[in-house]
Amino acid sequence: MATSKIKTIKKTLKKAIDYITNPDKTEDGTLIYSHGCSVETADLEMELTAKQGTGRGDRIAYHIIQSFSPDDDITPEKAQELGIEFSRQVTGGKYEFVIATHVDRNHIHNHIIFNAVDYVNHRKYHSDEKDKYRIRDINDEICKANNLSVLPKYNAKRKSK
Image (cartoon, rainbow, N blue to C red; front, side, top):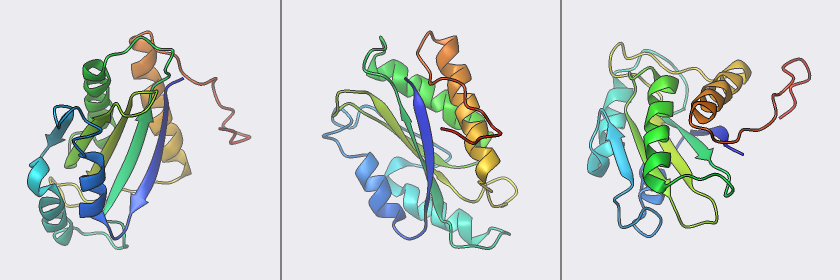
C-alpha cells in the first residue's frame, strides 16, 4: 500500500539531505532529483531562502516519506517520477526540494525534503492536521492513477490512520 508521512526538520538540514542522497541507497546517486536548488548545495540554498522568510518558528524544512508496497509493480524510475509529481503538487512548485528514491529495503520509497519557506513570496509553509490528510489525498490520487495500491480510506471524523 502506498503511504506518506510528513515530519519537520528543525536543526539538521544538511544531515537529513546527506542521509536521503546516500549513494548506497539511491543506485549510486542516479535516483536523486532537485527542484529550485542544486543537490550539492541544497542545504545552503534553502537556508538562504529561509532567511528571507516572513514567518516565525524554528522549522527549517519538511521531510516527507512516500512508500510503495512491495506487491506493487513499480520500478525505481517510475517511483521517482511519481515522487516528483507528488512533490510538485504538495508544494505548488514554489518550494525548493530534493527527492531521493531509496531501493535499499524490500519496498521502494521516496524521501522528499522541501524548504519551509517558498522562494516566490518568502512565505512559510504551514502544516497541520488537515495538511496531513491533504498530502495523503494527493498521494492516493497519484497512486490510483498509476494502478498502485493505497490504504483504505480514512474516516476524517475519527482521525484514524
